[in-house]
Image 1 (cartoon, rainbow, N blue to C red):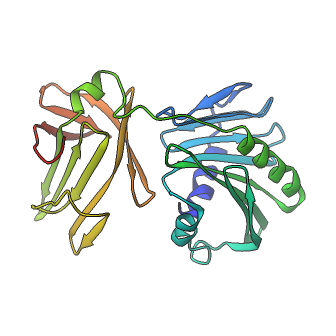
Image 2 (image 1 turned 30 degrees about the vertical axis):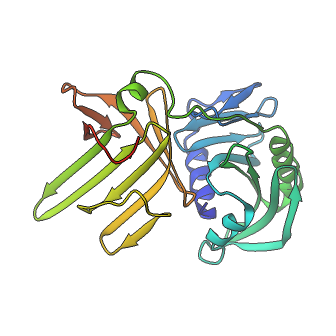
Length: 272
């Protein structure tokens, strides 16, 4: 989970708060893997990447996103605070279902304080909650982040998902091809009936028995879990990354739109 991604994601909501709604309810992610309570009178927004909430005074912003790390050691191994311009303050502390830690990003306008809670689900994957504020509001921001973390509820995700798109894509091979001006790109995604997926980019051959993600020059392969909720296909990679596609119907029955791109829907014998 790239820490700077929280900042970029959060700022995107801050500069575009049109359509924000006041919520006093529990929200769930698209896959139904977790839910949390929005603080009273806070505004909230969501997109395919996650949720962002702000207090009425707009002094505290909280971002909630799913992650796919098995434990905090794996999470920490993927972090590079220096590269993201962040400094760790103190040491990570154990909390219910996970850990919390504070970082600071120094800017000409002042210091941005980020308190992050990393929670782990008993069903795999988990949730990362980042509370952002200036130094003056850091204590209130931290307490809000902890309160939201304490209210997170995990649920076992539905394998493969449900609905028309899930039925259409389950057990299929999704193929994307692009060629232009001497450049070519190919992506193969195998959605196994078991809920696993295998993905390969720019490669002709593929071995589904690899133990994990791999990269060989232009050959890249990855594994993980997939779900379809409504019109959203979510790929949760074993490396911890997440990719989401907005699905749409196309005229041809053997095609599906994924983020506006045409993917061919084919039979496959790579996996069950």
